Length: 146
Image 1 (cartoon, rainbow, N blue to C red):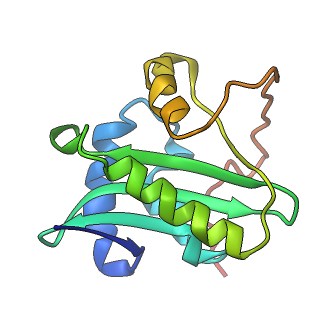
Image 2 (image 1 turned 180 degrees about the vertical axis):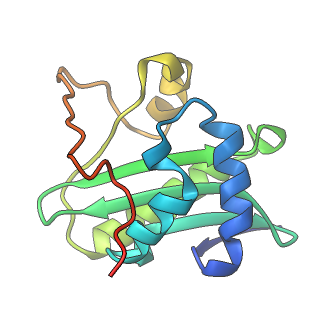
């Protein structure tokens, strides 16, 4: 049985391993050691994990800025794909965002992962005519110590 739960510290090792598998080419600022403590400071209830027999098999992070919701860090273990885990996480996060009166949800897919677009389309997401831009700030997302 798969459970969708809000992230808790006891899941750190499982999420870290999952992200190393799913996001092996990601920027250092996106490692679990940096991203998870940052997320825990803002809307921690919008960070989900999928659990099966005490093992983290999926994750999804979201945020809501009062105007739009954003979904990121969607990952499912390769051994557990095509079992409805992503769908279950999306249904739960959409329920939580709707409870916040979020009118629209956005997600971005990196070009090298474009093969996943049909999965998101089956979940009701549409490719929109947008140009996505980003800027890394001088802190680079590094953890700040008090």
